[in-house]
Image 1 (spheres, rainbow, N blue to C red):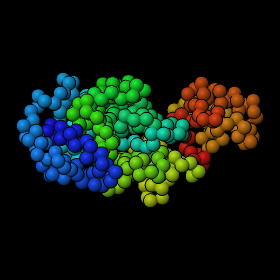
Image 2: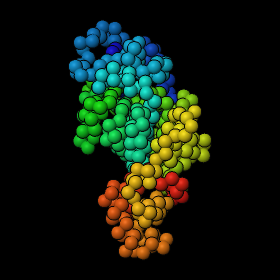
Image 3: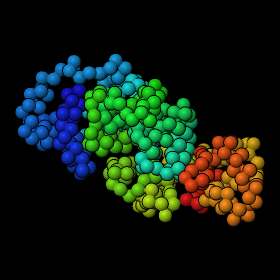
Length: 364
């Protein structure tokens, strides 16, 4: 607990070093005394004295939040190396954390400014993995993280959320409800004391925790900015399995994920691909298809859905593929009412859930 207090006190210097992610990770691997010497500056003597005399009663912790250190049997074994947090404050309980971290854990990450396509792919992956009993981990942010957490909870699946700041720091109103659901169904965790801001460095540091917790990291949609590719780079440094969802080559939002695929990341098209990476010795991973999940889908509607998934995502494009305009409008409306299509930007239609097998990659 002294360690968590010290990190909060050193927020300013750590923010400075957050510009160099590698250096920040090196600093976070130091012992308390070494960390004070390295970054505390004129506050060295003050922080050493306060650190030595700090009592547990000086750190407020609500009764529903557990403090779990790396010597605790409930602490995830994946976090017991030198670069991981020394302890975690856990909303949802240490026992639940132990159980959820023992299952296969997949990190779903990506841009906070994701497109409709990225949001739907994140939701589809999280829903499918949660239904298969895989623990989904992410932050509680916007874009891909929000989509993944929400979809996993909707499927009554296990989720872990690693926070940038301390538990109890009020998130934006649009995400406040999500934290409550995560704490009730899964676990929310932070290495900072409750109600302490993570500032800039907290967002960088939380990435190392998410990646370490995970058996597999999946980047759904990301630009080539260092911040958005940080989880992927950390996974590569740690030798963890890395996967990415392909995107349109003309979209800046997919430039990072497409680069990862060119560098050798495994390609993910749906939950089945992720399960195959998690269980490579299985005879065949579960296959998700529209025909299987919607047995009442007619051949006419399935053909339209396949064409939308292949890039013909407006009535005009469908008519260019030989579908009569009236038939296209009726089919699109029926598919939207069935929940298989949603509306995106510019009046485009976006498939919700898994894409029909064999046709997905044609338009993306």
